[in-house]
Length: 362
Image 1 (cartoon, helix red, strand yellow):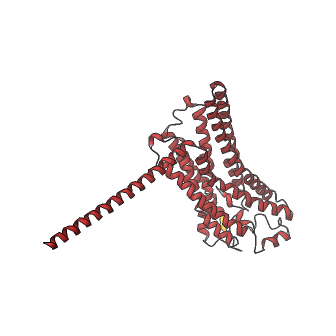
Image 2 (spheres, one colour):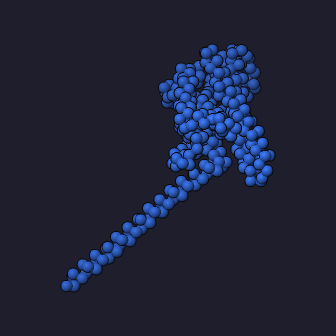
Image 3 (cartoon, helix red, strand yellow):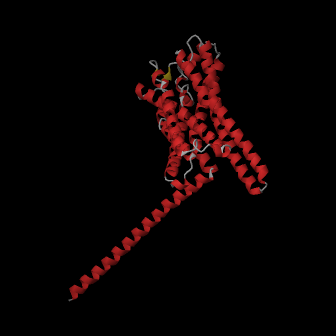
């Protein structure tokens, strides 16, 4: 997710210079209560349990899939689920911080590490989504020309490169995250011009460029599928094409709805900081609250990905069903063996008792 929660915990701090924040807003920031301190912890814990169970389920299903049934794109899905699973482990920390009025009780080191994990997740999450769109493009539009690019070796190298780049691009969080000396909240050091530039670069690398690649890839896929539907001339092919288009549009819509508001508001925030714009009370409040809500929408994407696979991907549902039946079969077999063992022991006990009684009679 990257700096999904950057602004969230500096809402009552100093994202802008003191000369920029109106007096009444400063007074507002000193207020001890906000409804966000109630709603956010609850929301974070819900997202933690949903994201943990959902992404762990995806990892188990794909990890237990037989090699002959595995798809190359599942490698990206598996890595995406791992990135999302690591991210959701940070949510309880932020929930406790929000519950304590944004005070970070875990020390500066964990403040930096937790923010770094979020940053790495943001980069890796969106890079893997982009890789999945390119893979779908190669599989549908350029199938005959992409033997090497869609080989298992190349895809594993790509995943390794994504993790390496994400780990590197997340390092500013280790440097520019700190505890506010006044109230102990975990915030960014926004006065650094380098960090401001990094935020804008992050928006470009994690939204503008990926959206361009995703739209280009899926646009080409849509054209190819529509052409296939027209030339196929049968209802079965048309139904399959419509289903494929539905998956494509769902992925695009979820991605845009999750990330567009946050990136627009985040860019606005940084530009205001760079230009030292004076904001009135209402504008500052709307921007702050908008970033809080849009941040929640952004990391909600990590919990929605498993639902997309489960409800729209027939191949994934088939694998999940097969795994469930296999586990249930083992339970039934174990229960059957246990009952047989109990019955055998009972028979042995009865035979033993009968033998003893016979000896006693003698």
